[in-house]
Picture 1 (cartoon, rainbow, N blue to C red):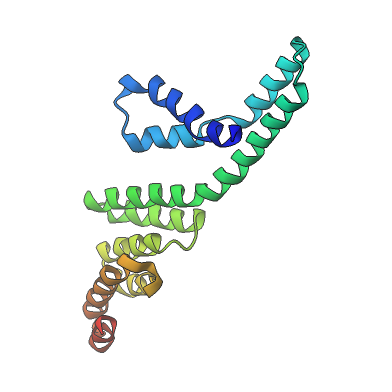
Picture 2 (cartoon, rainbow, N blue to C red):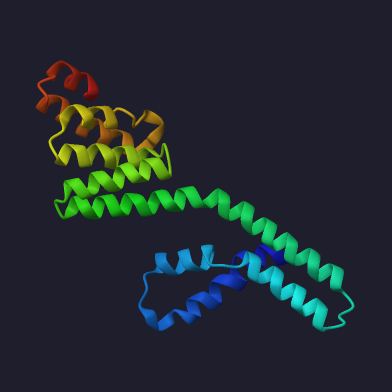
Length: 178
């Protein structure tokens, strides 16, 4: 229970309080509260506490710290990829909104290398290529968005049909919408 509370409330509430006047977005506060440093600092603090005091429950303290740090590594490792994908997608779309296709493409490619196969990244990659009028490459990127992508599948298929049509591949464009 302590490990769970340390990873959530015990960490997130003080971060939110410390950042109160910064006018940071809630997403930023959540990110800092979730991924902020805690592993090595917690272990060093526990060792100092144990060496400098004569607490009766030293083994329990050490066990709680190690469990919290271990759980932190596991949970943050699992949650890092989706969080990174979200950040990458936002960056790509910010570049696209500013009509900066080259920057969007560079960001999308970096995201695919960093995070991997998230369908949102394939959609963003395809849209960046579409912005640059690189129809064949855009079609390939958009083709990676599969039906399992849920709500992204239909917009990806519409973009794919547009790209194929602009590339003169009209029959394929019709099949993409079927």
